[in-house]
Image 1: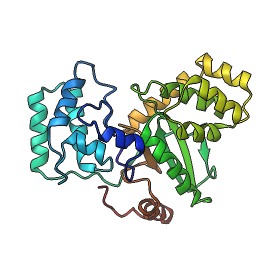
Image 2 (image 1 turned 90 degrees about the horizontal axis):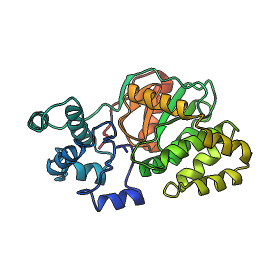
Image 3 (image 1 turned 90 degrees about the vertical axis):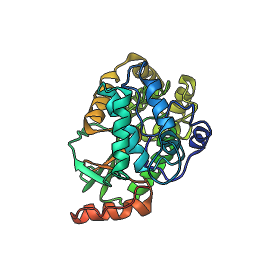
Image 4 (image 1 turned 120 degrees about the vertical axis):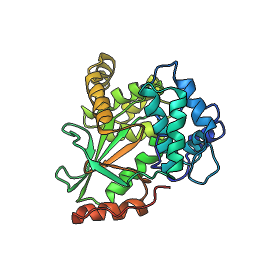
Length: 291
């Protein structure tokens, strides 16, 4: 759920019709909040204005324009303050202060962090000069939009870019965890990417029955796959990657890191080409608009 997407997917358009009641906002991860605080956070985001010039409320802007860096910064400030135990009045004060200072635009590439990738599924050369790490959720509609674009962009740099997939299933997506386990079970048989593509293409139909059918179509050994899927053997892997993502600063899905630097921009060739070309040259990427 992030500002990395250009336009809205069908699911995003459906969310846009009900931003006043939606509990799933792009790049606003409420999963770590106590249930008692979630209504207060959502109420504030639905009532307070975004300062990007859109004339939307913060929640409305997050849903209708997931690329907006302003509403993302405001929403995450609200989330951070509530998680820190601040009162609603104190959180309101934070918002007022931020709006006095004008729009807050995140850097296109943030400072690098260490992200372990050994053993993770990847596309591209193992020793590529650029590693793009994608933290993703198979049930997230925004991830479903971004995933094929990320693969296409990596394919434009066949000798220089490695795309690594990391599991980050969100609690409020009921089928995401099972899909993550299934993808790892497929990875054990060298079939991660075929199942990855199929699940993202059908991200609203991730039933166990469908996943088993897709796995069979992908040519997996079904006895081994079913055993792995049902055994819980990949729960430690998923837990580790959730922790890695949280430590790296992941606050929603999908989140991308380019050579360890969180990328705050659209997953589109025209936006990423200058970033990747600059990485190849060893030069800092030139800041660009994320709105």
